Length: 122
Image (cartoon, rainbow, N blue to C red; front, top):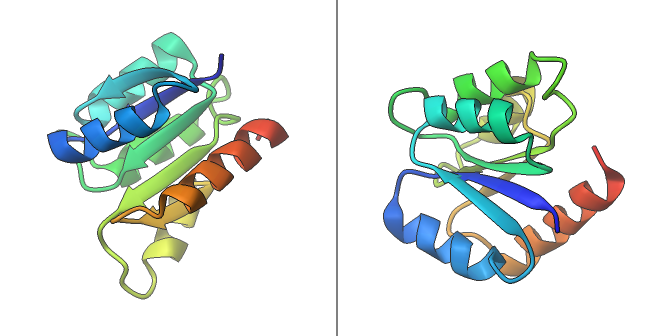
């Protein structure tokens, strides 16, 4: 079973993601970017769902840290954010995200992107 790390500080959003994914994936969760980076190093998940607005260390910095490490840089990161401003997607991709999805999440799109990124082994 593929392992997904969800880095999300809003309990409601985390609960929704867990409910959506728990039947198909092994899930790990972190409530801030620093803990997300720590779990990425410890657990080497197959994919990371990274909220971009996080306490302690934001998702931008956490993604850059993960993608700068040889042991982790292959792990696909999907950036998640309520911000849909012009330039946010480009900023997320520049930080190292492999995909960027805005909230509220389109569940079908999320599941399709998860399948694509996990299948391609990016």
